[in-house]
Length: 446
Ligand code: PLP
Image (tube, rainbow, N blue to C red; front, top):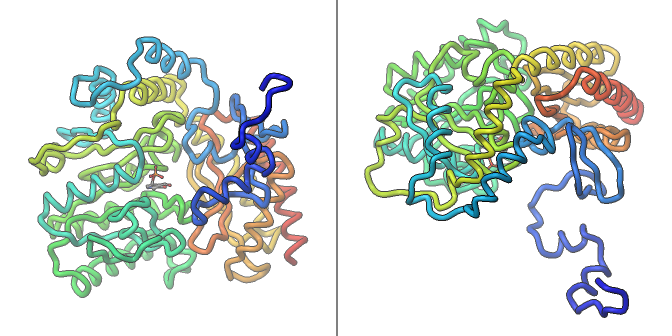
């Protein structure tokens, strides 16, 4: 505004109130916000973001796992810019889009699903809605299995299959859902079982649920290989392979929700489900693919993908800008072997954090794989979940310059998912901050 200009009525109202007040006035009350004083990020570079007050933070949550390779990466910005310079941000997804076709070819090949086809959406929710539509249509059944403590999105069907009360905004669902055990051993009756016995218990539970809670003609099991919102829950390797044997007996499809676990983030594998020695019928993806641009999708066996015969389209799904960003992100991820980096630095962080479990009674469990690490907080010396401890740790990390995530069924898990370009120095810096912050929380709660 030039000196002497009078602010118009809207600007005047706006400057009288904080951005947080304005947010609260006009955005839904249920829209989750982090921190007692939420931050506004105004710039970012590498693995660091800067807020409106000029404070710089090391980002150990990669946005929301969206910035898979970090911020301000020239290869991504240049690719997007080149597309923008053509003048085509979007015309019609009813026309041919070269970057969409090329991205679909890459993902179909990377998926390992034989004869795969890809459909692009704008989010993980839409990807899962689509997968559920395909599976129910293919199997002519609206019965779906999902894991306890799962999160699959916030639209009607996906909310229905979400097994996490904190995020299941509506209980009215167009799908019939049964929940099975599948990963959260720490908070299940099977806590003390070995991996092999735990897998056997989950398989027995699956058989029992199929026999008692469904009419048998179930469409699919939709599962996150590592539960994300649920608190970075890592099931034993091989679990989904064992469960798939039961599914196959009934012709039930396996849909792997790779929205958080895709693109090598779990370190050992490109897709989370690969730790289970099984090829799913479909996978859904989103979050990190566009490194911040909105893109998601489903990759599925052609037979399943083409179960729908009516015309369908996503107006923005697979648009030129998003698919261009995604192609550049995939190239970057593969060219720099970021999966190996996630594996190496994930182990380093896990080792460092596991050493804190015995020292600090407020830490119940540290678990993870690659750059998906969960710290489950408990009332000191017990296994009772402590929301207060998680809230305290969130603030203690923030005041020390580290951004992390929160989650878990009881909102008592701190989640770490830094960009996969993380350096060893940054990993150690984050670890040092976490070590200090956990000690501060422990002192506060004990
Ligand atoms: N599936 C999983 C495993 C998720 O973690 C999320 C979001 O956190 C979704 C689906 C929904 O994705 P979106 O928020 O992009 O709709």
